[in-house]
Image (tube, rainbow, N blue to C red; front, side, top):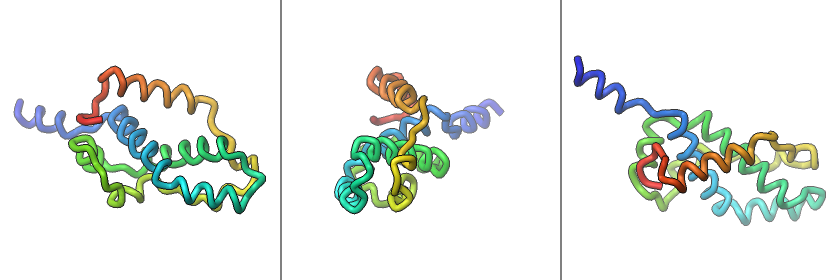
Length: 131
């Protein structure tokens, strides 16, 4: 019974682990999608670049949090991934939904949340194995 409890506890992924993994993936996604974002901005000059980047981050992060499985969190946390293609479905948002300035409104707590996650990761207080 004790061994079963240990195995169950080891198999659970915390919300913090999901946050850290999605933070990592979403930051990487920003770099991967740079040209795509720039092309969208060129086609929609009414959009501000900085607001667009922040909104894409927020939406990608939230999409990842909703979609990532515990197994994916474990797989990503166990290695430094270079190929993001297997995980692209977790964080790719449709840029065509951003056409007006109002579409780029971000939640007020986004910056605080990003800072909290980054602080946890930088201090090594991370639940994820290898960031």
